[in-house]
Each structure stands twice: as C-alpha cells, then as structure tokens.
Image (tube, rainbow, N blue to C red; front, side, top):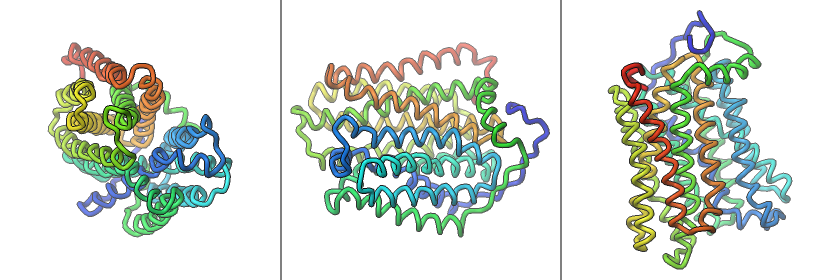
Length: 407
C-alpha cells in the first residue's frame, strides 16, 4: 500500500446524506472564516492591543503559522482516533481562542489567541476527509465538492462580514459573535455528526514520520500539491493586492466599497461542486488543464481591467480566478483521497499545508510587488504562478500513456 501499512483494514463508514452534507459544508465555512476575520481589521486591532505598525502583521502571520502547525500535528490524528470526538475537542479550542481574542487587553494575549485560532481551525480539514470516508466512490467528488463550496464561501465572506461588524460594533464583536456561533456549531455536531473510528494503526510518532513517506512514495500527491501551491499563491497575491489598487487614485474605493468588491469572489465557490462532478466522471486531467489556464487568463484580464480602469473587468477576473483555484483544489482532493483511504487525514494535511505555503508566499510578496510596480507588476508576477503550473502540467500530458487515468 502507498502508506506502508499493509493489512490495515478500512472500516465501514456511515453513508452520508444530503442533510449531513449541508451540515458539513456550513460547519467548514463557519470554521474556516475564523482564519480571516482579523485580516481587514489589523489597523483597528493593532493600536487597541498595543501593537506597533511593524508588529501589526503578526496578527495574520501567527494565525497562518498556527494553521500550518495544526495541519501537520492535528489533522493526521484523524487517521488514528474517533473523528467526531477529535472535531469536538478541536472546535472547543476554537471557542476558547475566539473568547480570548474578544477580551484580550494586550498584545501578548491577543497574539496567543491568534495562534490558537489558527491551530484549532483545522477542524474543517478533519471534516472534509470524513465526508470522503462516508461517500460512495461514484459520488465522492461531488460530496467533497459540495462540502468544499461551504468552506470556500466562508473564507470569501469572512473579510467583508468582519468589516461590516467592526463598523457597527467594534472589532472585538466579530470574535465574540463567532465564539457564540462555534458553541452552537459544536452542539449541533455533537448531536448530528456520526462517529467515524479509523482502523487500528500506527502510533502518533509513526504517523508523523509517515508524512514524509507518503510525500515521497506518491508522485500524484506531489504533483497535485505543487499545482495547488501555485494556485493559492496566485489567489493570495490577487486578493491581498487588489484592495490596494481599489483604494488608490484610479478607483478611489472606500473600505465599504472594497468589502463589496470582495463579495464577487464568492461566485467562484460554485466551481467546487462542479469540479467534484467532473472528477467523478473521470475527467480530472483535462479539467485540471482548464482550471490552471483559467487562472492565467484571469491575470491577463486583471491587467486589462487595471489599465482600463474598469472595475467590471477586475471583478470578472476575480470570479474567474477563484473559479479556477477552487476547481483545482477539489480535483486534487478527489485524486489524493483515492491513493490510500486509511491515510486520508494525513494526505489532506500534506495537500492543504502545501497549498497554504503557496498562499503565504503570495500574500507575503503582494504589498512589496504593488509598491514596486503597481497593479501592472502584480498581474505580471501573478501570471508566473499559473504559467509555471501549466508547464509542469505539460509534463503530465507527455507521460499520459504511463500515468493513471485520474492523475
């Protein structure tokens, strides 16, 4: 087996229902949104808790670091212990972290809360493989796509919602309200989420060591991780830099206007269920090429929209970008979940961590790139990521006779 765990039986899982799919989609969206509430509020949070201008970026950076830590250290536990209990415990940590953030009087406590929010928000990445376990193979892509659409909508709506709530009730209100929401979600999941007990397998230390083995032994995992790292780099670069362009002299948007613009990205979440259906039909390879090409086209459109001063073209570029990124995400998940069912938690952790690393690169270079060359340079640099992915994808086509059908 690909995991190096021969003879490990894969237990029967409860069959997923439409209602449970909806619950998982809503849960993933609500949990993932916690990662992004602080991003548009840094200018409000930093002076309130005593952070200087330079240190203000730690609000976002520590959340990202925490999420990466959770993907590597917590998500693999889904291959070892009962998943419902793991979700409940992890989500309880989210409640505590949000409550601390809502009342933190100083920088130290707030930054600790930001780190804990990132670590505990990986509960969503435990629920997604769980949905895959409960889905028959013929509709697994569709189910994963539907659940992912909820997660993506949560990510895309988090920033504008945080801005609106902060305008009305202050920045602490969004953390307080989300903590209450997580309590309600925790109770619903404890009531409605079925138990999923993995088969007996390796101990925790062995599980962590197996992450490297999984990555080395599965070329499909490496390939899909590379594709999605490039896609998330492009995604983060665009959505970090476009507010700077919209607030500039060419467009002159207010914060409220920028928040409304961000809503257009939610349309890209429609790609997730569509991509899942395409993958179920065995069309992963051509769909991957289409997804990568659409992101490249989106950056060409983004350049044209900036040059023409057209917010309509910029919005269309944002929708196409999100559509391609989210479609490729689901296509990759459908592929890697078939590699080793007993290791789906670890596979998902590696895959999402790779994508998240790419996203961190995109967001890290966004402001500097914009400062050096404006929106034109941003779109040029952004184009590099999907083009690089397409070049790598071309090697897959050259070897298509030897590659698995759903590569």
